[in-house]
Amino acid sequence: MTNKQKAYLALCATSFIWGSTWVASKIAVTKVPGLQISAIRQLLAGLVFIIFFKLKGEPWPKLHQLRSLLLVAFFLLIFANGLSTWSIKYVSSGLGALIGALFPLFVVIIEMIFFRTKVKLLTFLGLFLGIGGIAFVFYDSAFHHQTDDYIFGVVLGLIATLSWSIGTIMVARKKMNMNPYYGMGWQMVMSAPFIAGISFLTGQHIPVAEMPLQAWGGLVYLVLAGSCVAFVCFIYSMKYLPAGIASLYAYINPIVAMLIGSVLLTEPLTIDLLIGTVITIAGVYLVNHSMKEKSTTVAAEKEM
Image (cartoon, rainbow, N blue to C red; front, side):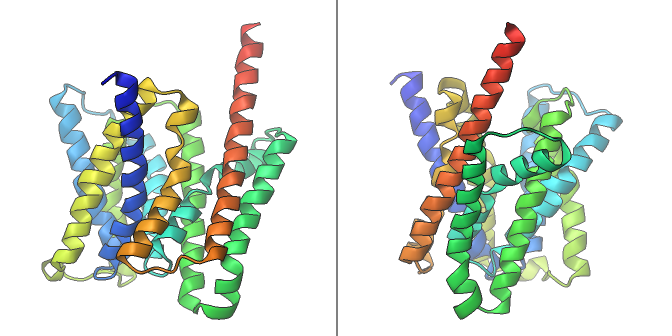
């Protein structure tokens, strides 16, 4: 088997695992508050990353690097991961994954407003489809059949996605001269106490000794499969496949989450949800495609 064939298998594994982590989170938060699940996951996964890279000879980060990592972790992990894990208690795993897939749209909107980034007509079309698709999914459920908890879960998910987008922009614009995955490990470990503190202040916690086996099973899967195996597969696919193909996982994740959620958790899989999902993913794809074209054009102009 060639490296390229292995890379395609790695891409499939990444898509399946990261899609299924939404279901694992849903299973875990049915027994334990989401903020507590997020705090424990970040601590365990972060330690795995730090130990792995320390064994490979990575140096201890400097104080100024830790400050920068903590600032980014505030958006990427404390708010983004913490709130998205909390939100999944109130919405389906597929819907949580779909909200998470919106982050490229938020990135473009933020850069348009605060950095005066010029965008193409295709980008505006993608934004329109992405927002319209989500509105299509939410409308009937939010305003006719669902409870206030559903609205609360949607709002938490949107805030988490917005926070992830801000953190993504910060990472892109701030270079820290550190292996990004080693840095992610430190972000996870530093964010864990903050998320745990929020869970205590909001009453979103139970004694660790009372956590059921089901919750620990979900956590083990999130740490080992979601945070470790999937990252290795993702790195491998990025190394041997074109970036456009390697990034396809982002469009597959919500579909995987919906299908697995419907089978394991009997979450509803309605025609409105499927149509809205297709529209939303099409919008996200157009935004990503148009911004990549722009980056390519700018790079070519710089070389001329």
